[in-house]
Image (cartoon, rainbow, N blue to C red; front, top):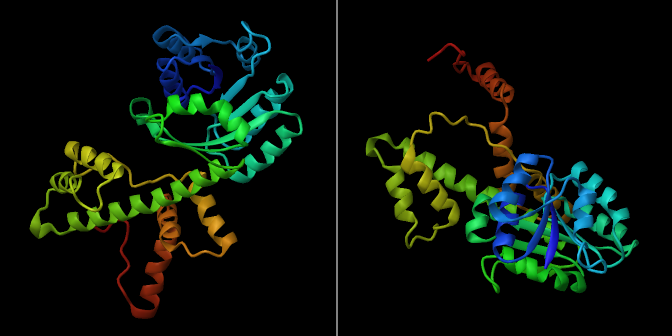
Length: 310
């Protein structure tokens, strides 16, 4: 089995390493020559100097071999441009896999466009983060049955085990749709955990040890989870988090999940509020909070705190 991996960042690089260690040949390309050289030296990856070079090297030994190109690129324009550039280099029966966080509607459109040219397409929702190299990745893929069967050995190599952590969930678009909802749920879980721990910390009279409590919850409790594991590990090192800015970024998938709920007319208040709380953390000026303070002062004469007040 052989494929080209385009994009060797934190996810793409680790996925390449896991594939190579599973006996799958990988031709890799990244704009960073240093990253490429590291994977060649440390893991035995086949290097390439460009995307066309990577595609060419897939058929060096067998010119008739089916080519599989796996993209791990930022969603939007970078992925769109790369797919459009690659398509003319491929033949009927070749396959492009998008393992990034693309919008599922884009994946549906791209799949249809490639199908007109006889090129297979798979949208692979990929979860596992930086721990995927060691633990395996959770892969939610959308494709035709024929494409899914062709890529199956790669999915098995990336997953935690042969029978767990990967699934052909439906037609093109279904993989990225499933991953989108997965990330929306993730937002809600993270927000609930953060708020609960904030309440525990605020009960100063008890002087609660949050590292102790999160470690306690990891064993036998209803809320035990990987997110709790990560939180417990972080709090062992530093409970005050003084060096961490109160800013939480949001990925496109959280927004797309809430937009999908509007399109379907399905109430998702927890997921929506979790997204809104991330927006609130990103408001450097806090202007809306300033307006709220002024309103309270206007109707009730409530105290308005100055930025110089302690």
